[in-house]
Amino acid sequence: MERKIVGQTVPAVEFTLNKGESLYTQSGAMTWMSTNISLETNTKGGVMKGLGRVFSGESLFMNTYTATEDNQKIAFASTMKEYTKN
Image 1 (cartoon, rainbow, N blue to C red):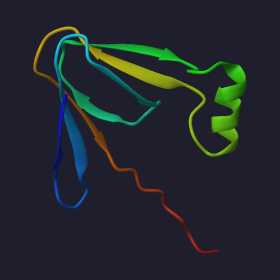
Image 2: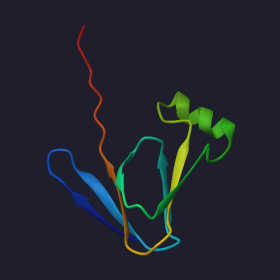
Image 3: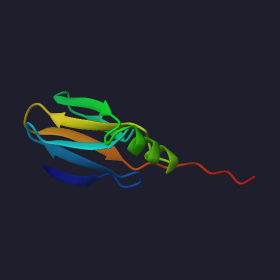
């Protein structure tokens, strides 16, 4: 597994996965990926662990991405939340 930072204003981390390598993130974090990457979604750790993530502001579900061929790319970008002053 290799990784590199791409972009300047809104950077992303891009991973190159070989067949059988996987990683997991919270739902909605992925920006782009190659076609030969499979996706599995679950609560990762059970419902109680998932609810704990929800109460801390994260996602209930976790995504696991697994490369089915060598040299597959997947990227995750930073997120920004907009706050308005009332």
